[in-house]
Image (cartoon, rainbow, N blue to C red; front, side):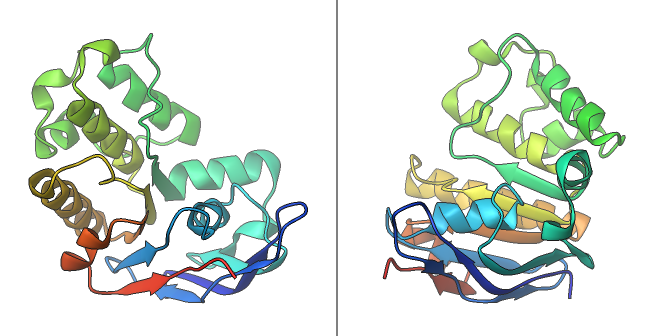
Length: 210
């Protein structure tokens, strides 16, 4: 089993404890995490990424339990093994597209995938040296996906990747994520409130505020 969680829970100050279903995924498997706003799905994503420390339970990726790592060791492990597609791209505006992806290589201390060929696979090869502020919203999202994939992670986490997209582009983005996860043998988890994504990923769990 490449990735699994067990008995995860988390408590925000002054709120009820959130308890999450267990997850088990092999390489190239995809999972959809559905939930309305306030259900705790973003909290779950942050737990899976090691950005939050659970109240109880464990998150294990490729045999490593994230809670056993801390500080720079956790940052380095995350950089090499977890690719995150955030809801907003969070790209570094002073840098070009290529430089944003090179920064991901640098921070993870790895050479990862060839940047030019990855951008070409995502349909934005011509944007290699483009300034971030010249990109359309869709192009910026694809650069964000490229940044998540560039280190060939073992786990890809996508936060609401289709929330602002029409049906056609929703299908394209989910297709890109699934194709790339299979190519590099990564587990893929998409966290969303968008019920349309169930048309493309049948394996899903739901999180609900208690």
